[in-house]
Length: 161
Image (tube, rainbow, N blue to C red; front, side, top):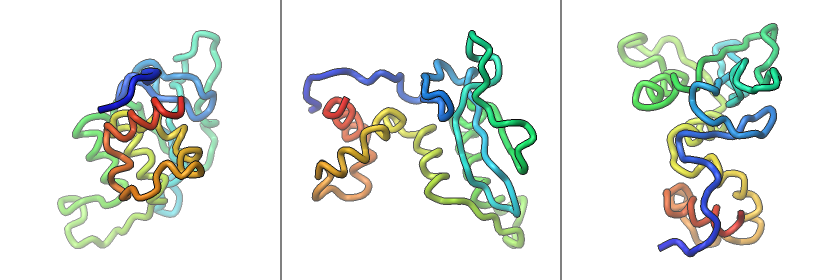
């Protein structure tokens, strides 16, 4: 059972931190996912405020002229269809490419972080504390999967917030 302490600031899988301004993206409709698609490689994944989501008119999205910029609404990446979109960044699939003749490349660590931010409850907030926790020895004797359990992430937030 989790110890008492501060509750998470974010609603898991409903709110995210913007990678440009650091403010909370309050709902999926206000968010945007962008990355760079170059030479059949996906990289530079970011979750940002969609144009017009901030009341003061600021924009958090990359410049539209960024070479190879690919982007899509954050809500498109949620749920089972969203997971399918993310997985297609790794492999077009057996229907679109039955002989696997069009290999794709992705920065797998960046991709996994994006996947977890969109699909793992409490990860978005807990990731802010992970480096500090690691340097403090918080994870000594943990296996790599236990770090990402809901209960573990929630406990980390409460410990380090």
